[in-house]
Length: 142
Image 1 (cartoon, rainbow, N blue to C red):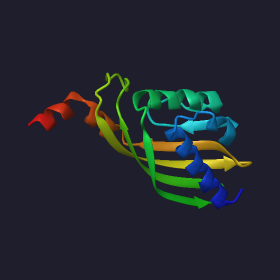
Image 2: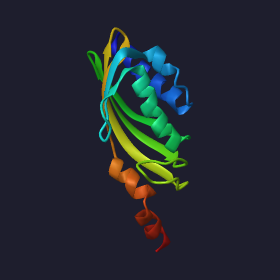
Image 3: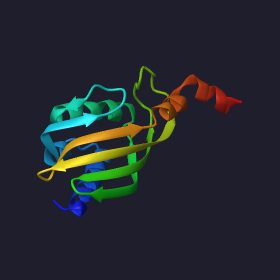
């Protein structure tokens, strides 16, 4: 696949994720996929990726990925994102707060034979925790 096709696959993946369509994983992700996400054991296979996505979508069912940048070279695409969603489910041991959360993430996606084979995701976990913690609620009341 060309770098433009790989970038289009990343765009399509997140457009479908925002709609809650996990079936896109079967279409765009390699069977032997490996994902590296801080705070989680390496994710393997399509089922592993779907399980991880369910964790985030259970916590933020209205999660929206805003693609700020996509840069591609060879078999890799790098993306910079802003994410927004309302915490309506438990996340990192924190019960639903119903707060709107905004955070950033960066991903490096490696393609093999036209499918996403591996990725490395970095996200602002501290920013999420600060927005859903009691400290955040206390700060907004002052």
